[in-house]
Amino acid sequence: MAYKQLPIVEVSVDRLHLDLKNYRIPVAPDDEAAALNYLFASEDVLDQIKLFLRDGYFDNEVPIAVREDSAYVVLEGNRRVSALKAISDPGIAPAHRAQVEELRTRYATEVPNMPDKIRVIVVPNRAAARKHIARLHTSIPKKRWSRDQQANYYFSLLGPGFDVQDLKALYPDVAVVRFLQMAAMRRFLSGVLFKDKTLRDYVVSADLYMTSFEYAYRNAAIAAAIGVRFDSEGRIEPVRKKPENIGASLPVAVRNGLEYLMNGFRTGDFNTRSPEFKARSQEQAALLARLLGTPAAADDITQDTSGSSDDRAAGAGSGGSAATGVGNGPAGAVDSGAASSGGGRGPNSPDTLQGLDITGLPFDHIPSNLKKRVLELRSINVNKTPSAAAMLLRSVLEATIKWHFDGTAQSVTGMLSQVFPSVTSRYASQRSYRDSINAIQSGAATKPGSVSWFNAAAHNPHLEVKADEVRAAYSLVQPVLIRLMRPA
Image 1 (tube, one colour):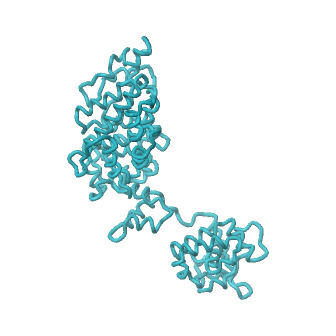
Image 2 (cartoon, helix red, strand yellow):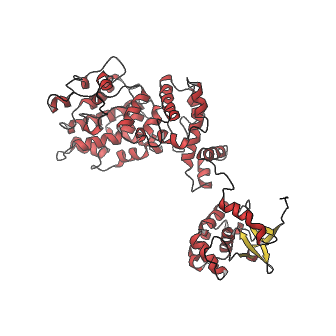
Image 3 (tube, rainbow, N blue to C red):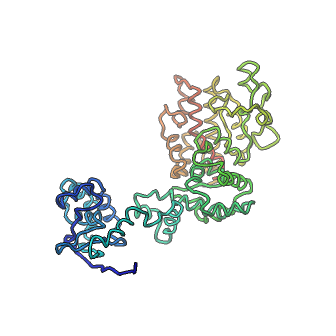
């Protein structure tokens, strides 16, 4: 059909009439008041009012109207016109008047900016508009941006004079930080010097679904293992450097771990349902060990089923006393031949191990004596000596904090209650650590892993420390330890 331009005219809102034959309304209403009541109740006109008051009226989608009996009847845009009418006169929708008045009060400064006249396309008759209206509501007239594209959009808005807080104010209903993390990670990946050149092509293309990859990097331990730390505004630290430059400067060992992770996403081995991304799962511990370049913990070695249960708990049997030995490889390494040649048995649950599962704790930087103390967490018998295990865990946490801040402007001394506030001050604003740090800092004495619980375990003669509490305490402090065992 030949294109025929339709007139666009400016019409007062109060001269626009709702369409009583509107396809949105299952049964034709008797009058405009009934039509308004239905649209408010079933089509969320209140949400449209909020959008107009918050973001302003924007006529990128011009209502379609037809002249009938000297009036303009709205064929397309009834919801928007209803919203404008109610903003002007809340009394037209008595059942929702209080809610409209509340929105008018909340956005009082914007009410005067609402138009009393809007542009509408005028069609000669209803038949002329039917195909267009059908296309709008029975197909997808605009392709929705992917989350990746949305992330790029929000990221592009940042600049001089417009920061993250401005972005949050402009889009209060959007998870802004999540989108900024996504955009930052895409840029971070683009700078990484992958050995496999085709892998870079993959990580910067739409083939990598960021909504899947975020299952990995939104986990603080995994993010730390691949060289990423977010601040509270979704930026990769240090924020003075561009994300792609941070990616380009990754140490070889960290880059190798990242390359392994991204290859897993490319092959489909990793996805949103992968157990590797479930908190505190044995599979996640194994992934962290692989990313950090450390072998599996000695407790994961397939053990001989002969001998007493005490002997097996102590690490005897086919693996020998592996829990107490350190091999020639990286810190904490043991001979894992038994594990690789076992008869198909899967890894043990962390709660069935003799000690605490230290797989995933980065040993690269901490002093050797502190490293030995951490290795004792693995070999100590939590079930037999839970109080001693609690004291050892407290010692590791306190000593790690002191090492982490040593030589910095926040250098700390004293007991756990005196040094942990520095951790809170430095990292509690970061979303990935916030909950754990707040629970450790402010949790009651009944909260395993809190400072108060550690103090009670050490000083309260009436407190019974239980093995499951020690394991719960370790689960709470482990993500914080992973961060603190890397330089500040």
